[in-house]
Image (cartoon, rainbow, N blue to C red):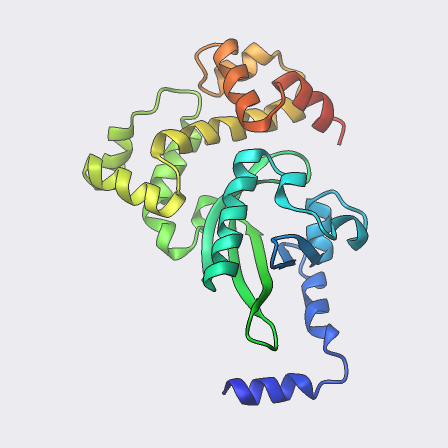
Length: 246
């Protein structure tokens, strides 16, 4: 079957039309990276996501050029795993920052690209934004009610034991399975959900930072500023000044 497909593709007059297909999918981000995890090309939707105007700007870039350090490092580790171990990543749910600075959940797929000599030349991937929890991949659906609970109670104290009860698992089972799927502990997931909510409010309103902090479940402005600055590497005020104008 592989030989038949290869023969078919090699016989096409314009191989580029296949990649061009991704340019007419506005909600699918398609990209190719080299063996050093540097961006080689992407579709138009991806350029918009990264706030680039043309492919020349994205060429040679890495995630560290446009994502917060913690997000960039997780993506880099995934890329290295795909390239060094020829591993496939299918429907991986993770956080990125979108074109207006919002933290947002996405579903990612990555496959190694094999050169003619058999070595791994790089990888290709697709990313799709998950606008609602009911669009989570099938293997994450067991946590849909948990995620909905966290998002609706973001301004309240959230007990991990209550989340375990909602998922019909013991406390230890819930923590283990949750980390296995999201690569975050429940507490880390809650924190990032709070930061996600705060980033949206900071950009879309002029509400005082203390008000933003309290409405997103942080006990005080000092703790909120510390956690926000640690993740985004800039203060909430600076973040608002940069992204609020976009």
